[in-house]
Length: 285
Image (cartoon, rainbow, N blue to C red; front, side):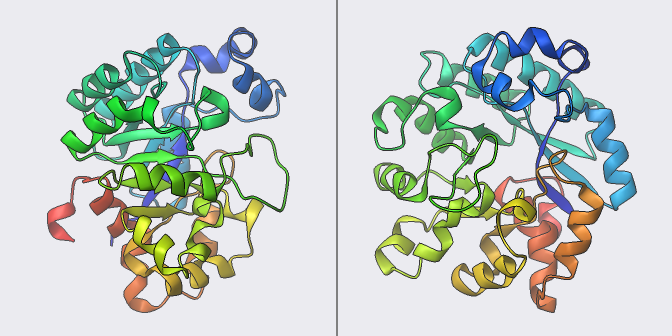
């Protein structure tokens, strides 16, 4: 069984060394990383964590920069990291989805091996799910290349944490209605969107949505795995830690103890991520 962490973040050594310079360049980065205790890690740090945790592959994302030039720089770093560790890392491209060059940058990254786009963040990057038209060009290129987009989605109630934001499930549903052919990965359990799938009309709109478990420990009791699996089925849940927000080894142990049925373990721990992101090894699933 291949174990895939479907949501992690890495930064170049330059950003890790000179945090203050990037804090000054991006308000959302300042919001999350002005505190020197907020962890920034490189691809090599992630590989060491994976080795300790027993994780075969991680999907790496960068940061939802508002400056397209910073997105391009981060994409180049992740492309190089994935090329250095092709058997361990796959990557998601970062774009400003409303920027004039968003579709062009996405296509460039797909040619470099990106398996999708994300993690996009409406609050950080200045877009609104309720106004989906400005994202049309990016959506079109993702649909043409059959690549998913991973969005940060926030819970409408509950714990307030740095970076939570205001992109809540009812806003995402509006976006899904506008682009029914786009494959979406809704991070952080979609901010609770799976629970609304008990409504048939919401389930229909969310049919192309997969949910990742990033940062579960902050947001939910671990009963969330069993509950969401029972609502949406075992093929739409991706094990994801949000490393370095959470430790991979502890998170994986908790997932293994989360009352998954035997036939669900393989898909949740890796098979679904391999299929959703078309990762190497998919033919064996």
